[in-house]
Length: 65
Image (cartoon, rainbow, N blue to C red):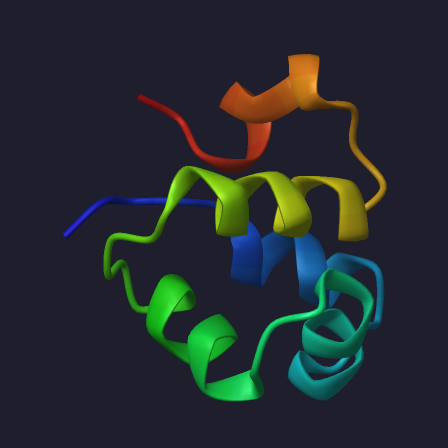
């Protein structure tokens, strides 16, 4: 399990899981799994970071090490 800030950031943007999934081009189930702390591929992380409006350089704000 890896901690991340996807849910907090998504909720602070008043964005639904479905909306984030659509923007990131992944399934809503994938968003649910990631928010629960399941690991995901680097490509999926990249899509989510960009869909949340961050730069890839801000990766640590969304997916801290």
